[in-house]
Length: 270
Length: 117
Image 1 (tube, rainbow over the protein chains, first blue to last red):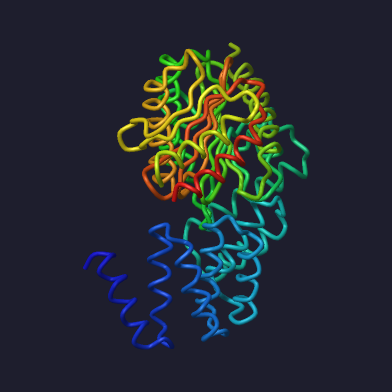
Image 2: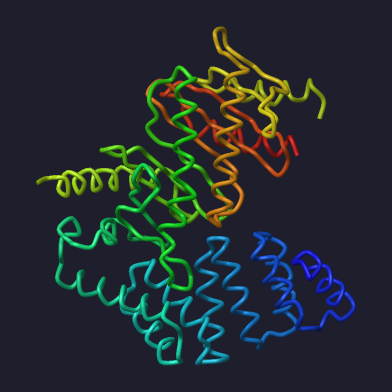
């Protein structure tokens, strides 16, 4: 059965019985389709009827993450843990957000809790990242001197859901990382998808008499993304939550560009 | 919305300091629906390239799980291009001077997009 058919079936079932728990499947399917406004309304109505249902609050938290509303996500996952203290999804989610917000002690606590509940390799990987990041911060290592390019921009990205990637001409990642709520590093996938935009920009620049491009910024439902050409034909991609003011985003892009330029010069030296 | 209403939308944008051209364009085929251009601006070329760029950004953002694109701003040495779109096929394109107040242009564009829907 297609997702569309499932959504129709679950919608009909929920209309027949508004107290049904099928709202969990329906809102999740809508969330995965990117229909977060509708998913939010359905989840909110479900929570009104089932205020102690941990999965309903977990669902609401994931919808909030998709919408870039991290305060709401934290609040919902904290509710989940009050109802079900061993809820794996809530611990992973809070661990992810804590890491993104630079609260490494909290991130380690939540992810350790998730690992103790038998979470998979993705949590172990995320936990390793958090511990390495903590160790690097404790040792006050200059990220430009760090040998792992994943941490190239780590000290510049201090607010919630800020991410920076440095890509080569083929869209391959040279530095930076992009973690999803489950702790997976999606840098390669995100980089490959977004790098195509710069090709389109270069094509447009050839036909518009406005000189070389300096940056492109686009606002999406989930994030604000800025891209800029970097030295040695590389491409810098910075993403922040929609809560980040656009002026601040520009300054972040400039700082990351300076970091990328210095790092590229360093790694290209014989 | 009638053609004259499109004209009203474009006039409010073109009044902003530093705006060289404003266009309402079909994103799917890059054709102009209505335009307000200063002398020397090639509306057809701007419309086609801006629509193509916005479409690419929309598709790439979707594939990267970032959701729909509402506003796009391209900065170049000698000009800026801003594009705003909503749920429908129509997008609004602005070509502006590098020194234009892009914050004001953005606000006007997002207001104008609401009027298109």
